[in-house]
Length: 571
Image (cartoon, rainbow, N blue to C red; front, side, top):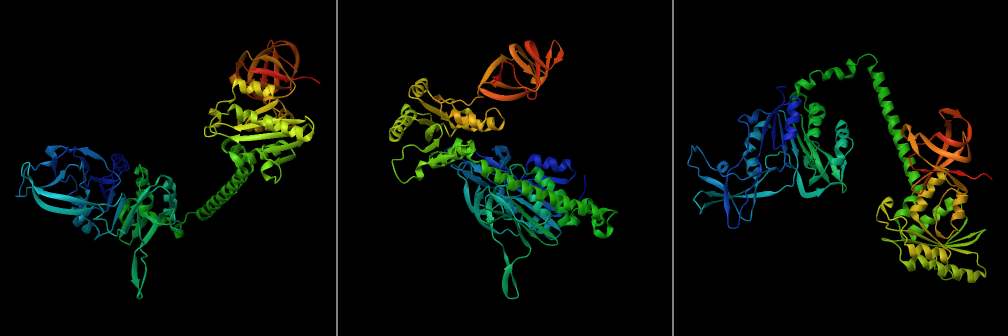
């Protein structure tokens, strides 16, 4: 343990105290007093004494750390609130009457600590404060007199009372904080913890008189502000005194240790003789061989890294803007959903797409029309919180036949696309969301049913080569529940066993010729993946082509047992 600095902690958590002791700091673990649960019942009251703990030589300490955010509460114990040996005639107590159930001693304790803090401020010192809501507390003073205590008046106190240079503006709670730049190493330090900060107060920037005018006090440094640019944390710094008003952290142990080891010593080196006694060697005139060059190279690496991150962030934003329609088809409703579906259909290769909301003539019943070589595809798109009603599924049939009559021919295809249960993650939705009757009716009435979740998965199946865009476009003219599967394929077998974590699998073939380099399709739970045959073995011997037998196949992706193996039909 280093003798210097001597640190007095007040209401610091056990975890924070223990960590500082473990790291060799010289600590007195004091207290302004813990909150007391009086458990007052109706018409009841309890006598209280202050339960603070200050060292007798408090004026000799170099650093005072106060955690007002730590509101640890203890139960009322009568014996702790009775005077034992009393060298005076003082028989006064503080009284807590129902309906008050919590006694907070910190206000009067802070008032009592004023004398010690004034002595501490006469020398080089630091006062570190983790804030809490700023409140005045009224204390009722009585003289003990059985069940009829004698009133001796009251006293209002504030637990910030002993904090010097305290520039409170108003109570205001918030979670969004921004570290103020241009504070050098301190800025970098605070940014590490910024996501964990909350605040309880805002503060004003004090002024001083200079040349017959008021100017901002240069000793006051705002370090954190909220989203309204209000100061929520600051430092008041002179050559001898530093007052640090920090925001709230749920666990401030690492923050505090980091601050005492990296920031505090540089602000007041004399307080930290053991951590700063050789700091002079870091000055440029004492630089070691190659030191300047290495530091410059480090600075360039840091700048290059920063530039690379900025470039990558631009790419990420651009990529999001390009493909955000894939999220929108799973989350949106109304015009936003229709626009996202149109964007998907354009990516799929449809060309003559009409957003019917943009048309000025005619009755706009369907949302989308697509003129194709196969005929006219009319599409209704819905985003709903649940699943579709029968009438919603079948509405497209009426539109389909109306358009056929208008065209004078029956080359019109109807498709209902739904973003169902849109407030639920798509993977957790009921898929498919159609009843048996709705599926039968869609076949009988020759119209298609499709979910946007199917479209989302279709995008990646196309990218992975499972199905082509042309094949997918052809599926859009089918009836019933539309399923995007590889076209013109036949079953080879189901996988009997897997080895090497799925890199090798066993199947039986009879009449289907397989060759090294062939493409297969692996189906599991109606999902298809493409696989390339890297190696075939029969009876532990490698073969390049085979049409019959129990064989082992090594592929370029991992598969699972009981999956179905498919292959394209030969032309």
